[in-house]
Amino acid sequence: MILSNLYNIKSSPAESLADFEPQETSQALDVKLRKALFTDSIGEQVVWLGYGSGKCVGLSRCDDLSPDEPFRELNRVEASSNPMDICRIKPNQFGVGFGDGTLRIINTDKKKIESVAKIKPLHGSCDSRVLSYHDGIITSGSSNGSIVHVDVTTQKVTTYGKFHGAVRSLVSFAGGKLLASGHGTGQIAIWDLRQPPFNSVNSVVPSKKPLDAITALSAHPAMANLVSFGTDDGAIGFCDVRGTSGTLVPTSFDVATAAITQIKFDAHSGEHLLCSSEDGSIVHWDVSGIPSTEYLSVGNSRQAAWLAESLSDWVKLSSLRSKCFSAINSIDINNTTVLATSDIGTLLCYTGLPFPKSHQHR
Image (cartoon, rainbow, N blue to C red; front, side, top):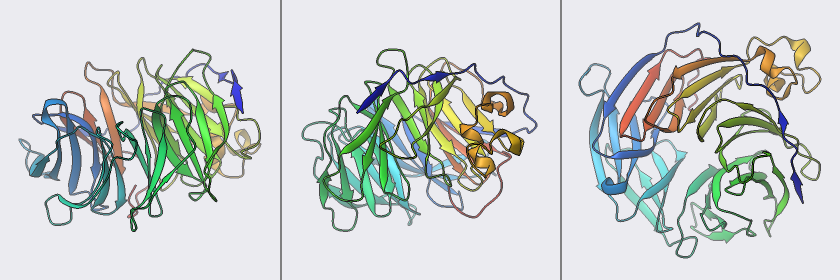
């Protein structure tokens, strides 16, 4: 069931002046960077993916005392195929999908990258383009539209029903019972994972612009029914997926002038969100100041503000990084620190963000 043209377009929220001053640290590497993640909650190491002529997986240490080399490289493993995406399984263990369709499990706990397992091509001769992890399962989506999941312990591969268009983004939610996939055709598909066969139970085309690909997805850490999405045209939206057999009516805002590359909720409070774009920007969203009268119609928690009709009137937007010639390909959050990668091979770190502090990793 495809529900077309249900886009509830709203004017973009006005950008507010930041009431905080994040500090930026950066270091250029000799490869183009696809993605980077903190290896654990301490935040002293980052694992990153190089692509193009410098295909590799690298590991660096964050060194605040070295202004000339804030990310000291510890280890680099060359790859025969472009690494496409990486997902965190647990501290210091990751899944990496490659352009040849293979999936590798790697460890980083000994200050070097160790390959634990290599799993055969998951999508025929096509890539393992995007990954998502939840509770022992890595889900992989491909440019050929196929989706599979892999049991990390047994390495058993299960294939989902095929959907239309390349898979551009994935996220599991509702305690791993549901999966959302974003496609190059502009559709978001919802999959029921409670028992096989895993088939799409609902879908929505959240843009009136033809083939506006869904390039990023993120699930709210506390609201099982809330999924945020980003599009190729630079819009950010919020979708209430409560009742997978019902109508999905998303709300969106124009935030960037190019594709959204990643969206991340702050996992501790759920009142903050970050998004990055190919236009080089990183934008911080804050709904912590919204009055309860504005969101009680959609939920009892302030976190329900993301679905409120008046969101554009109350949300505060602040730029960590303004539009620039180099695209931001990924972001990661650890407590009040944000890690980002640029397309010209720069690792960036922003500290001092107004997130509630927690020892729980993001």
